[in-house]
Length: 302
Length: 231
Image (cartoon, rainbow over all chains, first blue to last red; front, side):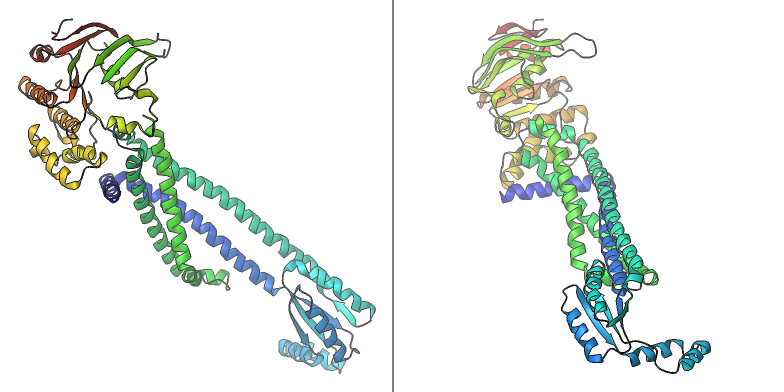
C-alpha cells in the first residue's frame, strides 16, 4: 500500500516535471479560476460591509412636544427600547439639541441672528432610534403611532425619510442578488474553462493511459499520478493567487479607503488570512483533481 | 490454457463502406507451455486475434477463454489481473514517451507490486539481455526503431508472465538481432512460458519448427504442429 502510494506520487511528480509546458498553461488557467471565484467572494464580503455601514447611518428621530415632561419622554424611551427591532436608542434633551445646532451653525451669522430673534430654545427634545435592520423602521413607526394619540409626539421623521430608507433597502438587496447571480455565472464559466483545459492536457496522454490498461495497471494506479499532478498544479496555482491577493490588498489599501472609508483591503486580507489560503487551496486542488479524474476516466474503458 | 471458440470479429460499416470481417469462425486451443506462430499476410487477422486474447477488443461472435475463464466476461475493474499474466509486444511498441527506457520496463514491475530491490535487480538484467544497457536513461523518442522494439520486448518479459503475445516483434530488427530475440523467446518458452508470435517473417518461422497457425482473410486455413511458412 505504502509502496504503491510512493510510486503513484513519484510517477505523478515525474509526469508533472516532464510536461512543464502544458502544466504551466494549466496552472495559469487554474489561477484565473481561483482569482475569479475568490474575487467574487471578497467583493461580496466588501459589499456587505459597505451596505451595513450605509444602513448604520440610517436612523429615525422622534420629536416630542415642547410641553412634555422629561419623565414621560424617558418612559417612552424605555418602552421603545424593549422592542426587539430596536438596536440603539438615545435621548437628546432640548439643551443638547440647541448646543448641537449652535455648534454646527456658529459660523453662519444669519442663522445665529435668527436664533437670537426667537429668543427661547425652539428645539424639541427627541429620541434617536436605530433599528436592527432597515426593514424594522416601519414596525417601530407603527408602535410609536399610539403615542400620537396621547399627544406626546410632535412628529416622527421616519415618514419623510421612508423613501430614502426604502431606496437603500431595495438597492442593497439588488446589489446582493446581482452579485450572487454574476458570481455563479462567472464561477461556472471559470470551472468549465479549467475542466476543459485539463481535459485537453490529459487527452495528450490518452494513448499512454490505454497502454497502461493493456499492460495490467489497475485504474487506481493509472489515475493516481494524474491526481498527483492535479494536486501539484492546483497547489502552485493557489499559492500564486494567494500571493497576488496579498500584493493587491497591500497595494490598493489606500485607494480602497478613498472610495469606501469603512473598508481596509489589507485589514480584510489579514483578518481572513487562513480562510482565504484554505479556500484558494480547496478551489485549486479540488478543481484540478476533479477535472483530472473525469478526464482520465474517459480513457480507462479499454 | 487459451481457447478460441468459433470467434468472428466484424468491424461495422463506415462512411458507405462494407463491414470488414477481420476474423471468421476461428477456433483453436493453446496449451501451456506452447510456442505458437500466427502467420498470414497483412490484414489476415493476426493482430485482431491478439487483441481479443488481451481483451482489448470484443468478438462479434464466439468466446475466448484464458484458463477456462471467458476473458470478455471479466469486469473492467478486474481485467488488469488477467493482463498482468500476459506480456505483450505491441506492433507499434506502445512505449511511454515521457518515461526513460528503464522506467518503461520498471513500470510493469511497479504495476504488479514488485519490491524496489527486485526492480533494481531485474531491470538492468533484462536491459543487458536486449542490449539496451547504454540506453537505459534515454526516452523512446531518442531510440532507433530497433532499439524501441527491443525495449518493448524487455517490457513484455520483465515480469515473467504466463503468456507472451508478440505482434511482429522482429519487424524492425536486422536478421542477427531478430534471431537473438527469437532465441530469447525460445529460452523463455523452455522455462515454461507460452509464446504466441504473430509474424510474417518467413525465415523466423522456418527456423523455429514449432506449431504454426495460418490465417487468410480472417479464416484459419492451416494449423500444423511443426509448420512452415506457406502462403
